[in-house]
Length: 378
Image 1 (cartoon, one colour):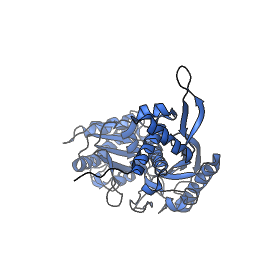
Image 2: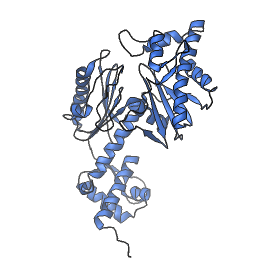
Image 3: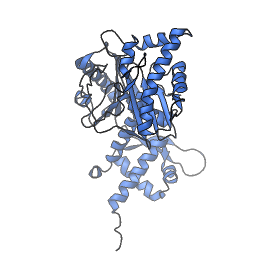
Image 4: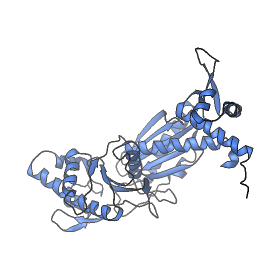
């Protein structure tokens, strides 16, 4: 049977995509440089650039090559709007607008009171998005949201689990951002975004199987297997707060209750008092050592369960007090004595949830730009 040849429209679409991807990687190129970069013939690239320029997707920058030989014109992507990156935390909303190169075009921070509830959190998110959409006439074409609460995989809504410490309730970021963002809104848990950031440019680079453990005001974990964040049926993989472990007096209890027993919760809340934990761990006295050992033993019980079920190559520890060198070392020392020890290392990426969400936002914006060359292929 004779194979079907690709249509001329398909070949043109693939060439246009190659041109756009080359410009996304290098920012500005001549047509000859695009041909060399893609391995596509110069005449074919010249035609593609002409199509893309006519459709307003690329522009002649006005810059020209110098030196011997034929003068070449530099081309670049035209303005194609921005992507919104937002992080909803116990302390407020942080939002950025980024372009297809990952360059920031504004940042807004809207503080929140502790346990703000859904109305205040929704207002803060909408306020930040509205300000960024109005700035520099940048249309927000896609949004990626990080939330310090569980996120339902199917709906993108925040899930309020029993004893959840934060407190934005069953928020729906897609609905809130609909007036400000023209395209899709992607939502995931902050620990999942942090794990992606560590995999891309942190201590888990080149490691496709690891467990990310977040120890802060909330407790969370992310399973990365074969390089992919595993979210589960509802998106609730890694909700470790109620895993049974060893408490201060050796009794079995949920991990979150260990902090209640140690008096390390915020008043009238299930949120962990990160400042109190740091203070309790400070110094070399007997109490600090005992607290460190108690927490390392409790966390070690959680890690033992994680290792049993997901078989990671590495455990990465992040979070407000999980990043303390003495705490990370205590966890590593304790877990090294377990039946199936794996290395425990401290996370390295700054603002990891934003870093992970930002990378995905750039990818989504680039995909929208490429699909716009031939809408019928979308």
